[in-house]
Length: 166
Image (cartoon, rainbow, N blue to C red; front, side):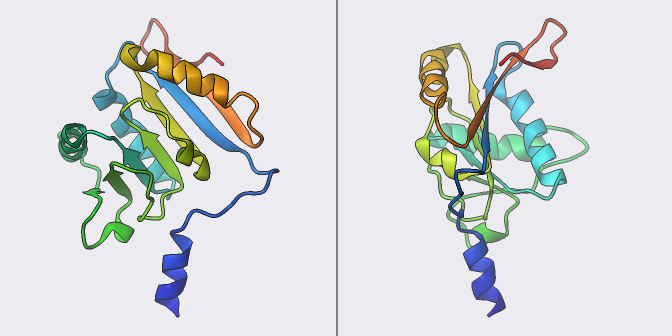
């Protein structure tokens, strides 16, 4: 019985219209993804959450896998690439699609391509650079009138700190 309950809890639950999910748009201008994503992932895990990182490219997923093991000399972020024997046990899972087999309620879109399925999570981090700014603007506009969605736009200030701009 216990195993069944654990498996059921990994399926994203439907939300009521009173529930607000948050989409944070991170415009990467001063720092690249490999400097920003590990810090976000650390915060999610430190608060007891789980994270799904999505990237379409096999090469980018391999780079993210290596990054999370080596981003800081004194630490690493425990994680796995999707498709392993113990996906459900991973605090952070890297996948090409929006499948939270680890029960994540947070999603990081690492390749800059917005996915509507991200709205089934509690919080989405949408990272994009100048190459993906057109797609990010389209996603921002499309989410403007969505019931239950709170959008936030983050940019880096002159000192390199993240500032909420919208």
